[in-house]
Length: 505
Image 1 (cartoon, rainbow, N blue to C red):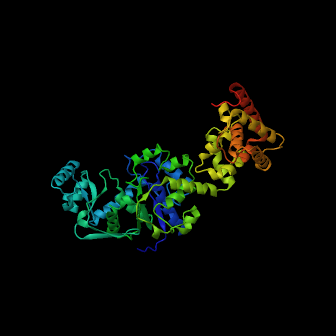
Image 2: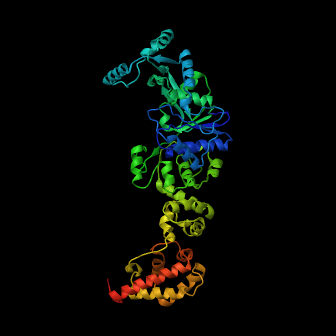
Image 3: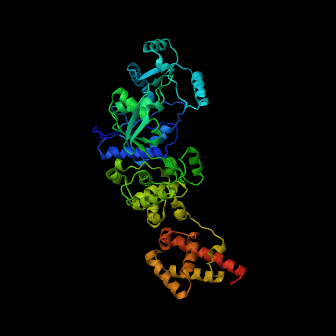
């Protein structure tokens, strides 16, 4: 299908829940198509289902997309030439177009009560017929229908689906899809309270807002023929239709659902954008990850920035096959993007993480820490495990913590004392000044490097694992390192005297 109209795409979520990965991917693809074609990206809020409306959902949506870097050109918060951009503010527009369909014979008022509809469906099920509206009110003349409406009789509006022949619709990803019209129901397009359903409202909005490409989830495939028929009934040019692949559970078995999403929280994962931000993921990492869940540039390129995606994204390379949510891939991409950040940029992002964890952090110290932990981070939150100890004024440990594997207390004390004697004369303790003298000592002593450096690390940091040892000691500072080593020597000396120099515990 070709479409020569200026590129205008829309992301049109309902504020009925949290912003998940599927929504984020749809918005991303919309954004990429708009930017690479110098078009417009529209945010439209489809909030006519007031029963399912969730307070705060729209705010979370807007904040989440902005955090991801997916910015729109028109929307409810910034306006634009085709507003309003909330469907709840467009009721009269939908009623006008519903009436046009009635007047042209493509829709009709249906006066059937819910009791009658239920009875008809029960009878159809008894006879093993797929439940559908039996078309009783299709036979009501337009004049009679108008009179009954004028008299205030409660009614909905149904689309008059053709009952003969077949309808072919075209999806950019899946090609032509043909369905027998007799399989289609006369769908309700306006409820009895006067509010249009999605089927009518979204099509009217897409036309009036001059949308060139409709990119949406595959859950809309069953009603795709109806939506195309509505365009044709109005005599409008259809947009390019694109239905994206389904997200599967991490196991690859079955579609991701809200229940599985709740279970994921127990494993420290989430499919909700706000949660992922709180878990320490970068917007760059998430964007890279979701861009490849249904699209690829080739069979080997995986690392993408947002600018790269604007350059390389191609709707014709979308894949309709379901995509399993792989959190290991997310960790992989997030780590890559963390390592791609400048030291200053990463430090700016780590500072609030340290502060939130209760560390007395300042930007200057975080900038010193960042280079030694950058290669070790998968998420921003990892900085607490890797370097939170650097903000402690004091460290504490049991005497056994200072005894190296395979050595007795007296030998460990000897090693600790020699470390103090080697480091004490140095004007500063750093990789440049301290590492070689300590390695020379290891070679002379005959002890293993892991034993010597382990004692030094444990005593000076209170940790068994740290970033590179001598860079870590430099950040702690010479005076504090020496104070801790001397304190550790006192603890181990007392312990050795009590237990004996070579006891086996």
